[in-house]
Length: 355
Image 1 (cartoon, rainbow, N blue to C red):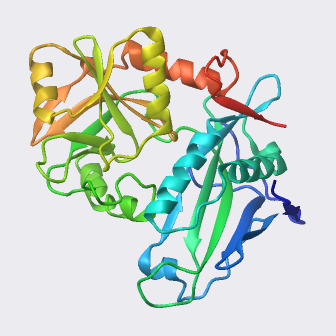
Image 2 (cartoon, rainbow, N blue to C red):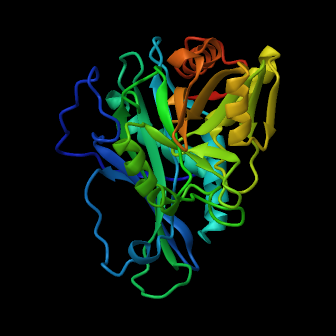
């Protein structure tokens, strides 16, 4: 069990209007920090006032990108309880990323305990308006002051918190997605399955070009044959074709999303056929031409469920479900958000309470 020291801020910040929250802009009064030193391990867990970091310009993370991060949320239930959604799964994924980036692992229970303590410290920052939550960003950075390619000998594990509204301006309304055929996000054997900053930096160019064309996000194809669907920039992706829900299999280049896993569990529980396999973009377009493409949607912590209303692949534009949110997308969204907020029974044991 962690022995977390605490230092309360002497200058609390004004809280933003919870009815007009912008994702990723406002941060709470406190943050968690724990250090790693080779030979000593992880040590000095503490909650301190949110403030700038003091770092050497030669810190290895700034030059070689040895870092990982996670994202999850805390919710305020109507009965006052504070709920976390599947934090142990997020923290287990942290160690998957750590292993790939040669970062020392942290015990999952210790990371969850740190999250609970930090959220409890800033519990009055959790918004209560519909569709809002407290976004939790754990991350680890390499801090050795050294120029040279090797694993760092020192690290910082940190947690910051951010009250948020909808990730996409569209909310639960369908988004327009541009199918990327020029740039590549990841290939098997690389770091595509890890939640590391470099994956996201590599996607910015394609995302900007998609935005310039009027699209919300990019749908990535495989990096070898450029024909198999992988994921959307911030989401895993699902297609309902002729009654069957299909999502790309995890083959080493796709992030193992927690919301993805939750969606698959829900579909199985409801008796809806769901398959994890390779899915070609041609197959999706053919299904559309045959009238069999019923719905498409993305899943992720930030947006939960984001219906896809339009795809553009090589200037071949198709509308999905007439650009409307599908029945299944709505059902999944309502169920997951209902469990997250404590409005629906959590028979899967997905939520834990911050006491």
